[in-house]
Length: 84
Image 1 (cartoon, rainbow, N blue to C red):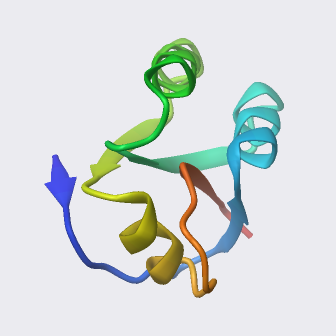
Image 2: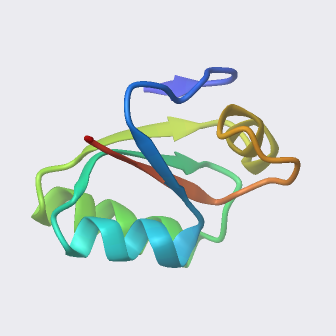
């Protein structure tokens, strides 16, 4: 599923590659959003982690739109929603 504009709500959001990867590895993520224009190596790694940890994954068209959805002024490759 690809989405262009959204708002991440309903939980705490961790933004960025390191934070998202750590959140998935610790089984804290319930949903991960990944920008399609991010580095393919990063995208492939987080996709595999999401499959291994059974985490819902949604593709977003651009890093800029994902950053905007996270409420930050810069683009981001990925973000994870953590259930509170």
